[in-house]
Amino acid sequence: MRLVTVSSLDALSRGRACASLAEALPRAVVVLQDLLDDGTVVRRTLRPGFAPQRETTPLEHGCPSCAVRLDLVPALARLQEAGAEHVVVGLSPGVPAATATRALQHLLDRPPVVESAVLACSPAAVEDRIWDGQTLAEAGCTAVDGDERTCGEFLVEELAFADTVLLADPDLVPVDAEQRARGVQLLRELARHADVVEHGAEVRPGRHRPAEALHRAASGCLEPPRGAPSSPFSTVVHRVERPLHPERFRHALSALAAGCCWLRGHVCLAVVPEHRILVQGIGPRVWLENAGPWPVEPRPGFRDAPGAGTDAAGADLVPAGPAEHATVLAATGADLDAAEMTALLTACQLTEEELLSGITGLTDPFGISSPN
View 1 (cartoon, rainbow, N blue to C red):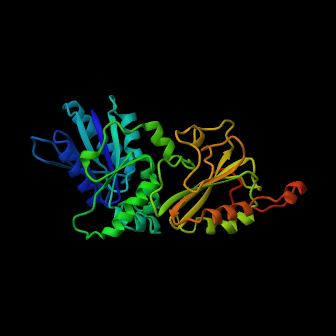
View 2 (cartoon, rainbow, N blue to C red):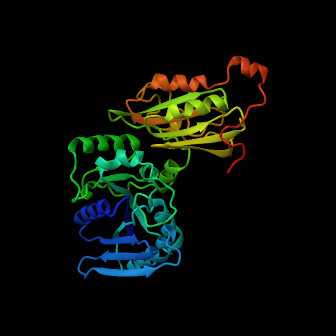
View 3 (cartoon, one colour):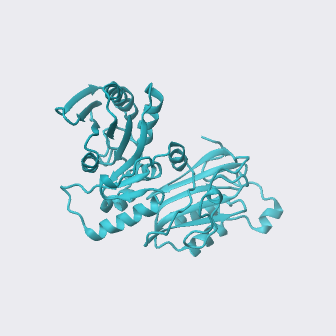
C-alpha cells in the first residue's frame, strides 16, 4: 500500500488539498481524521465506487498519538487487507506527519510506503501564523488542551519534515494576491528542499525519504540552503570559533532573533564549553536547550551537501554538527542585515584577554548548565 500523508493547521486547507489529490489520483482512497474537543475521533473514508463512510471512536486520552495509534492505524490495516493500493491520509489539524508515519511503520505488519509527506497551507497566512504567539490550543488549531506549541513551531517542524507543500487557499477566505505571493516566497525559503505546488497533480511520488526527513526535523539541525533565495527572504549563516560570553550573548540574542522567522543552530558558551547548546527561534519565541557533550565526529551537513560553499550573503557554509566546539547560527527572514548580525555574534566571543586570563566566575544566565 502506498500513502500520501497530508498535515495542516486547519481543516479547510486540508480538505482543499485532499480534494486536489483525489482529483489527481482518482483510484485512491481518501481518509480524513478529526480529533474533537471531547477526545472523540471522527474518521471519514471516501473510496471510489463505495458510499462514503463515517465512524467515530471515543478515546480515553484524546491526544494526537492515541488518535493515530488507536484509530488510524487499524483503519489503514483494514484497507490494506481489502486491497487498497493508494491512500491519501488527511491528518487531524495540528497532528505532525512524523507522528503518523512513525506509528504506521512500527505498528502495521506490512508497513506502507509513504510516497509523499505533504503540508497543506494557505500561503497568505503563513507569515502571520509564524509570528502568532498563541499556542495551537489557544488559536483553535487543535482540540488538545495544554498543547504549548505555537502555530509557527508546528509549521516550521512540518516544513522541515515534508517533501511537498501544497498551496491550499480555503474557499471561504478572501485571498490577498500580494500577501499570497509573499507567503509563497517565504515557504520556498523556509523549505528549499521541498516542492511548492498549486495542485495535487504536481505532487511527485517517491519524494519522501524517511531518514532525510527525520534529519531535517531534528532539533538543532542546520540544513544547507539549496538554490537561490526567494526575495525578499533569505537565509544568513554565521559561524564563530571562540566560546561566547554568556551575558553578552544573552543581551545580543534578542537582536539576533529580531525579524527572523526562523533562527536555529548551536552555540558554545564559555560557562559550559563542553556542552553543545541548541538554539531555536520561531517567530516571537526563542529558546535554548543543552544537548550534552559535543559529538566526537562531524555529522552530515553543509560540507557533505551538493553545492556546498556559500549562502546568498557570501557566508561560508558549515557542518550541521561539527566535532569542534564552534558556534553556528542560521537565520531566515526578510531583508536581513548579514553584516550587522555577524558583528553582533562576533562581539559575543571571548576576547584575547579573556582567553589568556582564563576568566572564571561566569554566571549561567540561561540556567542550562545541565542537559534536560
